[in-house]
Each structure stands twice: as structure tokens, then as C-alpha cells.
Length: 304
Figure 1 (cartoon, helix red, strand yellow):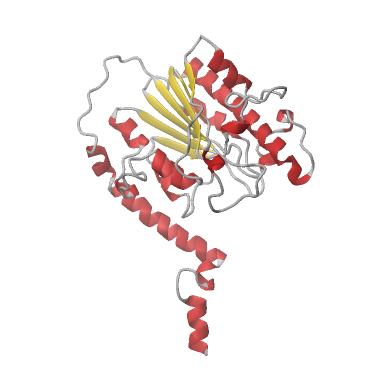
Figure 2 (cartoon, helix red, strand yellow):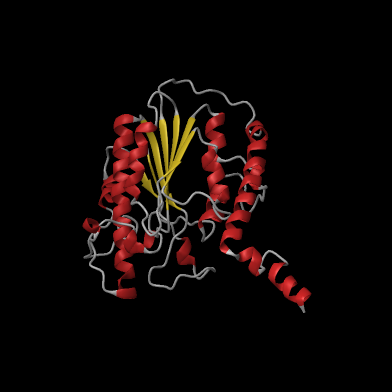
């Protein structure tokens, strides 16, 4: 009986012993260290896959910005899906797309390749995807590509850093020349404008790739925006989810505008791309399994 009880308690990765909080953290850290060493050891192999690249002719420094949103659906953003009679919750993006000052393209039929953050970004930002399933540590990333072109890479995130599920994204971030995460306290996650504090670290006299990873519209939606961004008055309880969600997207629009303006004024902005990792359905109960194509309908725009 004791042997059976011990086997139930300790055998296998799903045993109560392995799933205990402190032990789970311990094993996650061991796995993170293992993958970190493997990813770092394969850096030369990934770089060699690019071959010899020809330097560009112009030496004027340029900065390319990639902003990764979180859980944003284009179906709830006015610039992509206008709702007659409703407040425009993406005024900056709407004006940018309609203006003639700088070309901006909104892709109104973009879809994410997964409905969860890590699988999406692992496929979208590396050479490993559904059609070419290269092992992650062997797959060149956008960071590797930028380095192969002689660019400096800056990666700043308002997402969590360490953990078994965050490992691929964190490893990509840590291969940048400079990376940092906002300070995350229990039950108090900084608004995405906290990322603006990192922008002065980017040097204007080099070619740059700047990656910003937002907290965006991650549930709980009401925690993602300050009070002054409540454009849509929310009803109490679950009935207010959609209003909170739209408000969080309005706040993201404001953050994007600030990033764009700073980079144009200070960092020789050449292009800015914004896309979400995946979408969400605020009127539907959150699910750990795929529950509809609406969770893939992401916003994507490119401003040159």
C-alpha cells in the first residue's frame, strides 16, 4: 500500500509532488536554464544560415519598430471594423491610415497562426512554423536576422519573463543587444505606457530593430487601461467585458501613437509594424482550447 501511495504521489511529471508550487518553479527554472544554454550554443549555427549579406549602400541610421500586441481583435477596433454611431476607439490609427503624410497600410484580413501567445510568436518571429517545423533553438529569429544585417536590437516587454511557457519568447528577447521587462508586482501590472521609459536607451546613431511587447488587452480587460481611457461606459460584471475590452484597445492606440511620435522625432524611424499575437472574444468565456476563428482575427498595420 505504501509503495502504491508513493508511486501515485511521486511518479511522473503530473504527480502531486511535481505539481506542487515550489517544485514546479524549481523544475521550470531547470528547464529554462537547459534551453537557455542550448539556444545560446546554437547562435553561431543560426547566424551562419544567413550566409554573407551585402551591407546597404546608405549609411544614414534607420530604426525599424515592431510592436507586438496582446489579445487584440481587429473586429473591436474602429480603424479596421468601423461601427456607425460609436466612438472611434482607434483615432490615431484611423487618422494615420487616412493621411497622406506617411504611407500606412492596414491589413484587414490578417490572421494569427495560433490562439496562444508563445506558439504564435515562436512561429511568427522565427523560421520554425507549421510548414517548416525546425527545432526552436535551430530556427533563426528576427533578432538573428537583424544582427546579420549589422543592426542593434532592443527588446522591451510588459509581459512576464521567466517560466516554462515563456521560455521561447524570453530567449529571443535575451539574444537582443539590450532587453528589459517592466517591474511586475502581484495584482499590479504596469500600464503599457511604462515601456516608453525604455525608449531613451535606444541609440539614434545606429541601425536598430526595436521590439516592444505590450500587455495590450490581456484579461482582465479593466486592468489594462487608466480611468481616463474609459470611452465606453462598462456595465457591471460580465456584461461590461466588451466595453472594457474596447477601452483597452483605445489605450493601445494611444500607446502606439506615443511610440510612433518618439521614434520619428528621435530615432530616424523607417517603418513601424503593429500586430497582435492573437485575438480574443470578450463576449465569450475564456477557454484554454480553440473555440472559434474569431480568436485569430488580429490587427496588422505597417507605417512607412
